[in-house]
Length: 377
Image (cartoon, rainbow, N blue to C red; front, top):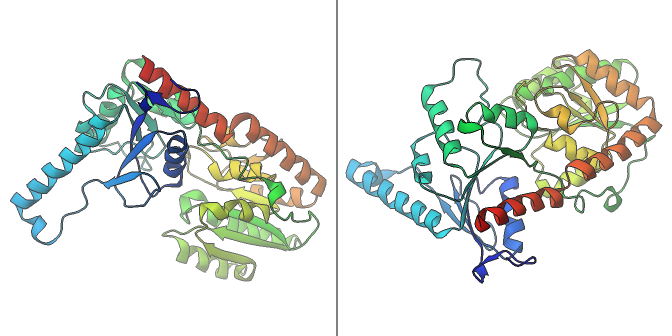
């Protein structure tokens, strides 16, 4: 192996990712190893261009003549053969996110298979009993894996319930690129400048708690604080959230700014005084946005659900509160607004915390070592 470029037998290491080509995290992993000289291909369920990488969209829904059974079967067979050829070509196949249906049969017999669980592929939203076929496919894919990884210890514990034989699960977070998320590269908001800006960055779905933040916005305003709340994201519950803001009389101090491209997230975070992550989802696997805010030296107020306490050091980089409690959110944000020096200290501590635990380069290097150990084994 060459320390600078990943090679095997004098040629570039070949990697096939089974991952969502649209997802930002897929782009980061693929780009990192592509830049190390690897030849990379992606098998995806959604179409998206990734420079220097072949992306194959697996099994798009047949239309027109393709719905005729013989033609549909031919399409399925052709698709399967293409997927298998991309898997057989690779030195390492890396599955990011487990899809729970028969497609997973393609992983049978793949000796150098890495499987990374992301969250919703392991943890379900419903309190109802999990369908047997979903349990089966989770266990099936995890059993095929030579190496398992998860993004948090919380998710690793959830993954172990489906992993036969007690395989080791490496915890490798998504991490933050500290060269990109660098507060020195962006205009700094003066801690005393008003209105104070409270930010939220997530899908606009009630399980992530934007309604709690809207309720807290009214309470914070009623305490005399001059604030604006910025809700960044899109989602099925946006209309209901806008109505809630109007009903509570805070629609003029809440901005719905839509989806923010990932490359614009550092500037968004830099414009804030406080970042809020009010999720009520007990199975929240991580707090990527919270870590990104910390990297930009922005203190975080978040709920202590799922893996979020791994992302926020309570009392040091931010404040953790119980979910579904707008008063607790209000108290925490109000306290920070009244103590600008505390906000600055928490911001500094947040960046240090991210550098120690969630540096993207460090996390990616750990995945690189896994690849090296696997091809050398």
